[in-house]
Image (cartoon, rainbow, N blue to C red):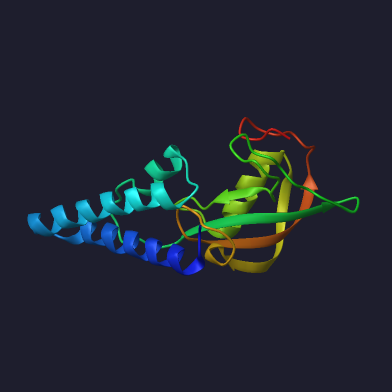
Length: 165
């Protein structure tokens, strides 16, 4: 049974653990952080609906200060219809987009993601919304979702290998 407060607490504990592992030079502290991450993994396995792959990703070590990820999505309207895609690893339809890559701004990233996932070349009109995923459902990591209004400049729908429909 998932609750928002429990989700926030677990995410916060994992964040503290990862930051401690990234910056602690004391071997005893590092052992404690590793044990804490393992205990949180057991707690998550019993408490959440995450599968083994999601748990492994969640508990994967990082070498940096733990912060929320950034996800970008595009609202594309053509002939009065909104473009949605269904990824091979997802169970639901979503706006085209994905996680931001290092070296690209969110605006550059959404242009790249839309082209890769749909074949459309787009221009970005404006930022419509920013959502905190913790407000909706438990995710393996907290992230900020930036939703952009985009205009289709040219191209025909051509899904890539990540997209089913």
